[in-house]
Image 1 (cartoon, rainbow, N blue to C red):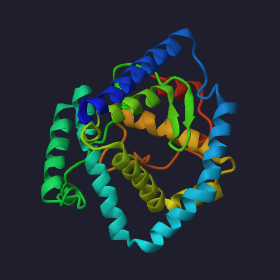
Image 2: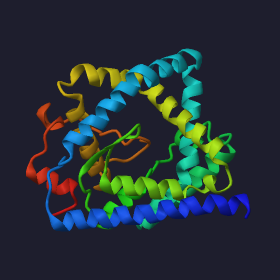
Image 3: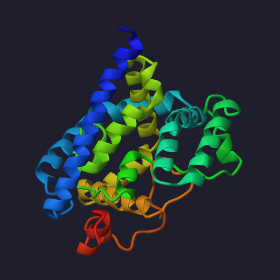
Length: 268
């Protein structure tokens, strides 16, 4: 059996896992109407693990990363990894029926991969082209699949049941894993996460210092962000989908009323 066929089998398993996750989301949404975080006890435990790992391992390494690499090098790496993910974004734009956006993303990928030196320079952004990053979690939301419960993933952090299934599909759909071995893709993914952590060091530190409960802050920011992206409230070059505009109040960053949760859960 060739190496290419061996790499396809695990990806088929990932796709099946994603389909099962999607069905579980639908069952959850139909069976009951939970609050945003029915698994808070478990989620807080995973969140504490992530915070400990970040404090003792990831943050110190990220600081060293920032010390060694100049800003333009970190930005170039960020552009490179984002460009690698553009084919999946193109797929999700078309799956959502966003033909024009998918067309723009396609040409962004072609331009950045060639003139932008494999994506290290975001030439399309410099030229004023809009950016339409999409993922399969948002695609499922567009198709009417509800969020399901909020879920904190080890290392990856904030998510929902629907977005976790979407993440699995996005990973399985990435074309590079079919011809690049795992011993290359895993370190590359780790480098991407580390570089992103280094780029957003100040923002993360400030949020930790200002939030009276960082867990609640992250949860509400994530859910509001996903709602804004799903409703088309975010546009432009935004890899992480940072919420535009000021929050209505400090309290709104921590608590969602019933009407807001209805919107996040994809229900009317």
